[in-house]
Length: 129
Image 1 (cartoon, rainbow, N blue to C red):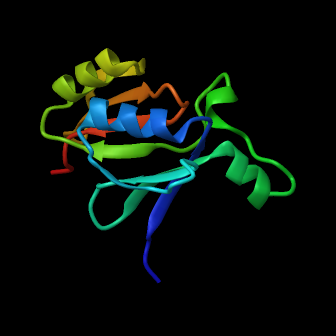
Image 2 (spheres, one colour):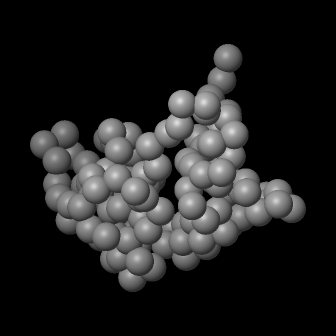
């Protein structure tokens, strides 16, 4: 067993791919011709987006869409960078909303949180020492 994908259901796959490319510098790896699924080039584990309409097809009992929730969902995408302050500013300039500004943690990391236009909660952090 290995962790293969993190798939986030969103209202507009193209907009999420564009945001993550602009805000965090990830290249688009793949987009299905239907436009309802796409992946970013993030390393061994893919960060992917699928349309809410696919969730409706996959989950007969429905799902909670991150963009429709007033508060961030109880999960996050953590992106590791050497410069959290610059990454945080770039994300805000691309359209993210600040949840927590960059702060030094007692264990030595610098960490911030932003919420993407599609509702995804992203932690920006330095590597753990």
